[in-house]
Image (cartoon, rainbow, N blue to C red; front, side, top):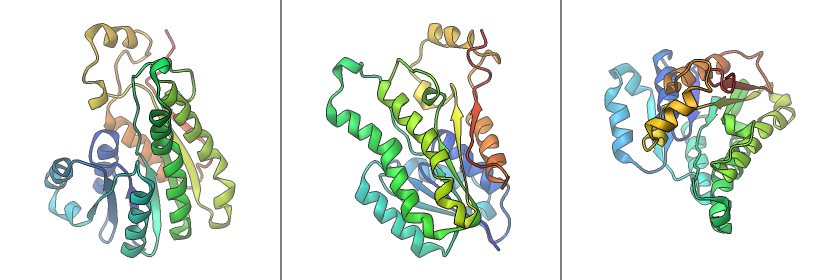
Length: 245
C-alpha cells in the first residue's frame, strides 16, 4: 500500500527539509500532502525545486493553522484527498521575543493556540484516518525541556507539545499508531536571520558541535523516527550537544 504523509507548515525551514527528505525516499504511488500558511511563492519555489516524479507526489494545501476554523477546513480537505494517513507531522509553530512584562493576553493565547491547542485538535480530527501502525510526529523544541528566558510563552507551549506526544500514546493504542516528538536546539533557519555575531559565538561556545544545526539534520532524524515503528512515546533531541560547555 502506498505511503501517505501529511506535513504542516512544510514550505520553509525545518518543515521544508522534512518534505524534501520524505519525497526523496518516496516510491511510486506515495503521496505527500503539505500544508502552508501564507507564502504562495515559497510553495511554488518548493515545487519547482523538485524532480518531476517527486513533484507529482506532492499536494500543496494553503491553510492558516493558527486559526481553528482554517484548521478544520484543512482537516476536511485531507479526509477528501485520502482514505488513510501513514505519517502525520505537526510542524507548525510560532514565537515572540516580546518581553514577558509586555505580553498581552491575546498574544499569549495566539501562541499557545498555534503551537499546542490547534495541533491537538488537528490530531483528534485526523485520528480516524490514521492507518494501523502509522506514525505521528510533533515538532517540539529544546526550549520545551529547559527554561528559555528569551520567550516564556514559546517555552511553555513547546513543553506542552512534548508532554502531549507522550500522553497521546494511549489514545492511539487501539490502532498501534506511534506518537513521538522531536526537540531541536539552535537550527539555522530564517528565525536566526537577525542574530548578531556575538550571539552566535556565545551560543556556539555552549554547543559541543560548536555550530548551529541544519534543517536537513533535523529532517534526517524525523525520517528515522517515522520509519521505525518500535519508537513510541519518546522525545528525540537534536541539539549538537547543547549545554556541555
